Length: 302
Image (tube, helix red, strand yellow):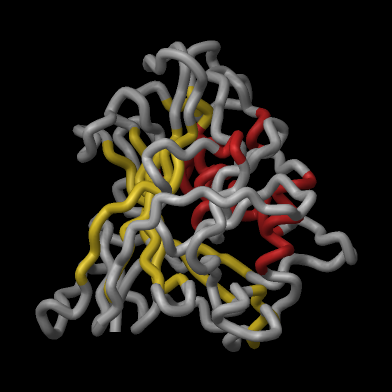
């Protein structure tokens, strides 16, 4: 069993880039990306060359499944179609494995899983329903940083998500929200460059975050330079890299569209830890300023 430890120390990197990677350590309460990347802990990464996601089959009452699928697929494709500095594609492939009947955010350590994307129409099950647009929960190996599972929740309870090309002045562009969240899904934290899709703010009525900035692409390629290499923390490998696993898009322990029951109890204990918040300056109010929060559930796993 791996234990979770909170560390409240900020470290400003010396590298001349503005992208930041998510780590195994929770962010301190007073953290701000303006102070630089938080680098305590181990960097997160997907080891598999291929990863998949599933959209909850019900989508949203206000966004039909086919429309949700189109937007979500396009958002992932934005990252997958990026070109690294060497002209090659990033060394990870992410694909839609099909709809999921399960809408639960969890990871099963000994049975099938889904990297699910689910809309919360009725109630946002967290304490910030008016200042959060999305939540990404990542389960990972705390000894290596390898991501085992990632689930994405979209706050559709306020019914102000936009799926049109022209975003209403007080609307929140769903494709921008998803594109930002995909960055967290892939292992990126909030960037320090205001021009980045991964920067911690969003202006209502804008669709600008549908398009990646060079810094976003640089961050993706820094983790996945090619399909056989993963860049990891020095504590994990003396060379700073490990060999990627062969392509298999199935979630860990296999895919099931149904919610599966763990074979044994107490095999995975997860607890919420905030990693970052997509915050606007000043008072945050729905329709005035939007906040997208990406959190991880730090897991004890076998």
